[in-house]
Image 1 (cartoon, helix red, strand yellow):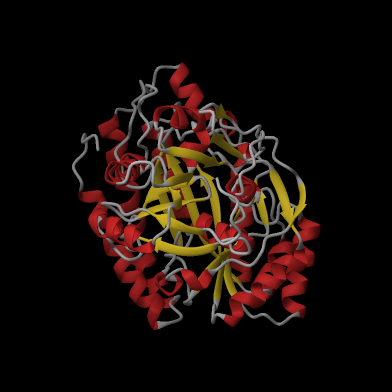
Image 2: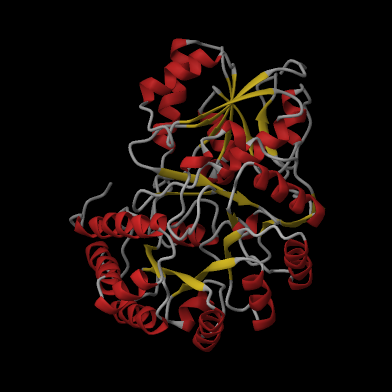
Length: 475
């Protein structure tokens, strides 16, 4: 790279045939019409902004075709492109990059970020000569050093040196406290971003920690390291978001409250500063207690995402998430007592799962009565222990890389469950949970705004439509 303090950089969220969510080293297709924006690029906009001129193309939000996107890229005048990709969309994404390189050989420098690149950075750099670097931690400022011409082993960035040699990141991710510069939300069409369990708009994502202290086999979070963000720095960003008119937050922490004492200090600051955001977050049943939940509610939390996964405790332990049904029921009961809604996530079809187990999981979802439930087919995601086991056991081959647990058909079958049967059970779970008259009435009575009512109908119809796809298809 040339050292140039005002180099112009394009942050690109590529177009797609579906509404793709690519963020935080995870990717999937929207089950309905919600779209929460490219959070990795938003964070990177803050890191890059002090050093370079930036422009943004969010082709998913703008519903751009590949050809429209190519025209906008050329019109931007940017020759360095930091782009998002993912296991759900990488074939489409790299086809777009290939078209750019064919039209303008050697013109563009491509720096990628996403789950599939995190998992197979060296492979992608070797197989795609127009790919110059891969970001392994979107909260790291090492990308600035790379753009300013430094060549050295980076912890959070793999790249192609001027000699052509591939220099992989060491992945010695720092721990402890870190800070982030304020993101350039004003460059993004954030007023169009939506989350299905949100209550107010506009909303924004925000991090208070990065990575995860837990290592569930089917999740990449434990591979990212774990570090806490300076509380003053978090509050500073909240004031910035408030100045933009943001009303609601989604804490993007993979396990909100992992450090209880620090989380209490943050929540008390939010109360003392009278920030008055409403917000949602993701946590674990074996992390939360009534004291913390009460403080979360006081500070504006209205919805909590919990990975409940399955009714089979033995299966939970097998995949490194050892908590009990009693813990699940206790945490859900505390939330109901406090008036915090639950979005319960369930995984169907992990190796060892059975039709009987899945029916028990459906019954558990009905008994818990969460306000939202997400039933997803198990997918051997890139970079996870689950994928390594699936490859070792012959469930999938290494060329199965386009993965989507939201709306795609299963990519493997087990002696207990065929692909067709698993898809039928997934559809049964969605219909059984969402078409109950009592559930529909409760959801309608819980609506707090016209926006929420509109979202309820649009997203509900779109979700149920995904169950009409015929089983056995491979795309």
